[in-house]
Image 1: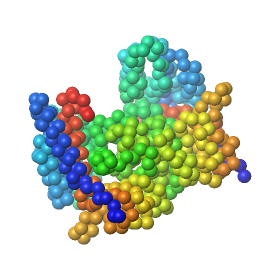
Image 2: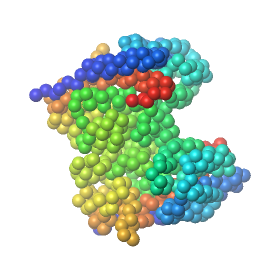
Image 3: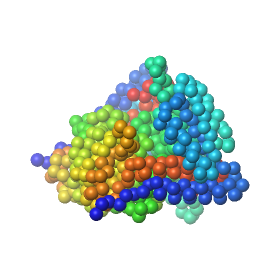
Image 4: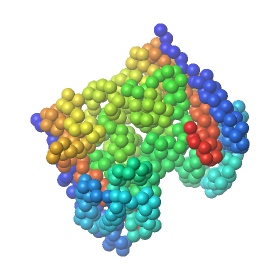
Length: 302
Length: 302
């Protein structure tokens, strides 16, 4: 029997609907609409698409959006000044600097991406990239949940898949996905409840020697590496759940880190690419923007 | 052949000697001595011993120490005020609030331990407990390394044991040991170099069903649970390295989380209790206090 296809698009739409309801309720209480400010530096086509998709998602959820475009040759000082002006603007609840920042052709030092992210007020850091927000997450008292890991947990939750007592193998150790997801799933009282935490978690990566063996120990296998179709059938335990975080452009196709057709024959459930984890990331960004606005209004965050 | 006993006492003495040299050099450059301020609330006998040991270690390293004793019934406001006065005192480089804070007998809410720790200036947070320092660690750019995990890595490093490409199983998911150690060992460019990072890391805990099976996959097994002698011979892969972080009082004996006599017959190397990881924690606290003083003096931290 082929694996169940975990439909991220439908789940994301459901969450965006819930966020829209939350926004409507928040506005009905007399607050102004939650507002997300995006900063786009340069003309990178992929970044323009991402920012446009986020604007559209804001519109549909009733969240205000503001886009600042800065030229590719803007200085770090100009970018930092703009971020600080957004920090101080009470009508902005969430701030997002679209990554990557453009590479510098002049051989100069360019912009220190980390310095720019660090300049965002943690209370408006809806990507949850700032060190204090990362630390709060790791200590089990998050201000915001990082969007992609939270999206993965939502896919599991809404597909009736519990992680408690199960073995999750996360392939990839990025700051954005692998590390925070591992921390969230290993915790006792996870941010999405004990059934979506309490996992035995293994972090694997490029230096893991016997990667296939390690992957085969997984009840739930998460691939977040950025290498097209590196997870093959023989790396998947029969009946495992496979979550594919990769979005790789190969020619004119988008493919994940998982060889989907192979995975489908072995796994019990698998996320497709596109239409799997991807749509959740934006949905959880909307969720965080509403959370930021609620927190700013002094309401409880949940 | 019985396992090598990893002698934490000797390694800690070596590190404390290096810190003492660093302190002497720092003072010879015209700086005043690094100074650690400890705050002890109440009369808990174990806490008094810990604080006394830390004072003694400061003395031996040429680090100044100050102890403030507050009565068991002091208020949270009094404690916070005292922490803030230490934050503002430029002659204090490191601040340590001895845990646990005393339980309240009056049934009141007592002191919020987390609020007190959060009040410590991150630049003086030599335990590395504050969220911003935890986040910086997780992002691979630590200000201070948490003492016990760093001590474990030092034991491995100075015993010629590399973690790169090996499977480390950490049993225990505490904020102080399990979680930060897992993050440090899984990183690519770990804080102690790539040979002491780059591990495949599994976090196991009380909800891990098949704990013995998981432990037996470890090349390096770290027990940090606080359950006397829970790690038995059949949970250890022959030839594995076993690190015992537990310090449990059983009657008038101190025992670890590992059944030492059993482990010795299976492992290639094992830390005893006492005299294993324990002494390293204070040594790394001394190291962090010197680092804090150097950072305050505007020097590089390494």
